[in-house]
Length: 376
Image 1: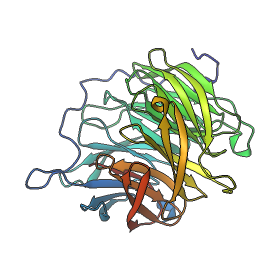
Image 2: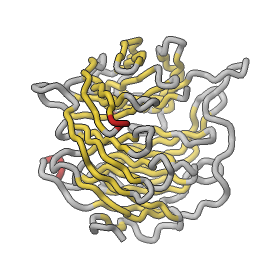
Image 3: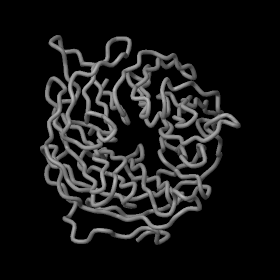
Image 4: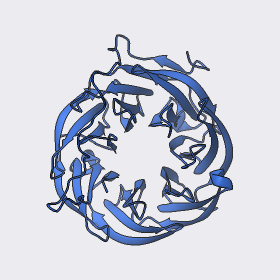
């Protein structure tokens, strides 16, 4: 049972979550050249109703510049992509009213084909991730107010949902009349599942047992904050949550042994007087010294330095994102490259990363990019 009664089972009669067979053990999804070196490939999710062409396959040159090679148009509004720890597969949400999750096969040249898809039993799934075991796909339905679990079959395809759990509650802002789960991830130890809910200002901690989610603990953030996405410090004991509705980052202590969170420092993602702003994504550098966040409205990347072993942050500055409405960003090439998806200007900006210094690189023009998944 949940600790505060804020969740309920939405879909009854779901099949059991026991996964037949072992985790995926085939080769890594990254394609290889004739001399055996890995290709520098990336996949881009786009909003097809805003001119995007589906899931794009792009190749990066040595400078990090991207060039689109192919497009898979079979998935409507593939706004988030994820890869398993092993196997030649990718997974995508279809962010539509009757939400879907897709399993995609990766060919040796990096091109994609649809294996199958399954309903999420919710409206507009905005995020998904693969459990470290490789046996379950986790997704968050933003307008459906629920989260879902799908078993991953041995061939990489998806089984019917093994669990769907609905959140309850609301917040003080107009955009918070209902719960809005926005991200679902697994903690670094693989013990607990964490979910941010933008609609009720809550971060949830779940246990995943036999394909079913059990609410373990929750932490409430500032009313009206709108927690959107989160990222762990490499120490595994600090969690950073970026909040869409009040332009803040919250630093939380994480007790991974007991699955408990405690909120601490809160600081702005933009300079004072920046105007309307809605943060999107948050990342942590591999060495844990820096945290990055996207600012939609201010159209910048916020750069923070960490202190006290990751338990505190200082806003070092903001860097123009190179476009308009930076929905997503990601790191590639061992953290030396950053890609920022500027949804409204239709481009992906590359940056060369040196700690707190982001040097703009090439810009890829493509309509409505909302997610980049590098495979190098």
